[in-house]
Amino acid sequence: MSDENNAQDPTAALDPIVALDSIADRAEAAWSQGDRARAEQLARMGLSVDGDHPRLLAILAAKAEERGNSAEAAMLFRQALARAGKDPQLLHNLGVALKGAGLREAAGAAWAAALAAEPGRIETLFNLARLKDDGGRWEEAVALHNRLLTLAPDHGPALYTLGNLKARHGAMAEAEALLRRAWIADPTNARVATNLGVVLRRLDRVEEALEVQDRAVTLDPTLADAQWNRANLLLTLDRYEEGFAAYEWRRRREAWHLPDPPGPEWTGGGLEGKRLLVAAEQGAGDMIQAVRWMPRLTAMGARVILEVHPPLLSLFSTLEGVERLLPFGAVEEGGHDLWVRAFSLPHRLGIGYAGLRQPAPPYLSVPEGAVVPPPLEEITAGTSPVLKIGLCWSGNPDFADNGTRACDLLDLLPLAEGARVRAFSLQKGPPAQRLAEVASPLIRDLAPWMADYAATASIMERLDLVVTTDTSVAHLAGALNRPCVLLLAAHCDWRWGRGRDYTPWYPSLRLVRQSTLGEWRACVEKVKDFLATGSLCSE
Image (tube, rainbow, N blue to C red; front, top):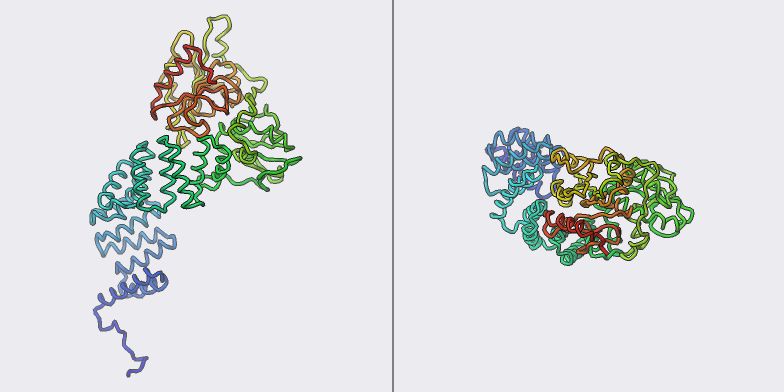
């Protein structure tokens, strides 16, 4: 036996390339077994002999990526490729690192090169398709997904992402088919199930959608999106007590970004003498809808402090049962004893469908001193009787579903025709630019006099009718008990229910629904019939 101190290196007699490949084999095996430290140690040992060995560089690059240093990883993958040439795996991994470093175009180029070297790489096709979709190049994304599914028809992630893409672009039947296939490929995936439920809701198959959402919740009771989607379906079906209880899940969704106010939350129970902050959430229309419950809180002994969007401050000064108004974001520690989010009130107060009729509107009124816009003053009692109509065609363009619920000014233009009609625009924000583009003399713009919701309320009091899509204007008209026709997309928000032409939220609203998504002409013709026959009463 030889002395241990004189034992020879077992790789010394081997070809250096063979020895380094053996080290690379051992490093890769250690990496795959989860022994990252050993893998890195072996890689560095081999690189001390050959600093450009591609497989060993790839180990260090993967380690850098794992540490969150995508830029370093990309540099190491590029160094490896300088020796390895157009290796598709290295190109794929380079794309991953470049995307992690925020270099999206460079990542796309790396993945395209990987596909040029190996056209059937499933993981690369998938990554590039998602990159194209995220960049708004959805037609290219569809083509890549279809190419992938030709090679791997049961690829669950591709079926899922393509189904979601189709749904976003309104191809609901295709989206349903793809998401069903994705669910078959992965039957325990609650997120696939909940997105399928959303598509079924958009196809107006509400009961079926609820069954699917129930299944999603069973698969993963902690999935907030599934619980929240289920809540929306229950509310759509007028199952308000169940629905508002489940609606509490909205605050656990990733999309929820409002921090809790300081202090304890009110989850029910006595309020006598307590300062209760009702914290704002969602949009201005939602807050107009929610403040109907302030008198109930006062009746329970609460001293109500209400946080609101600044344009609502003047209007809400007329509310019964509010001790103090705060502009959104001005909540301070110590200013209240308890807090509650505005749309948690129905659940806390135990409000069901029948309870929506109380209090009956109007529960808001116009503050004193509102100015009448000159275009309305021009229509005097001495002229021939005219019908004064306010028009609004779009809500906030930043709202994800606004493209579905909004129409175009041209869709409403027929309502401005006729000798007895005077039409006025109540539209604000970017969609109001359509007034200048259409340049119709039939519609007068009142936006310069709509400084806030109190001013808009004052204008509504002088109009005979408001015609609007699903916007805060509809909520304002309803809260003021002013006559209003609400034009609804075939797929609309839960609060408007299904099928009926009235809503217990606001008796003064008449609901007119699309029969085909995106088609407003029949809705407008129905409104014209109402105007001709005077049949605006809905109940």
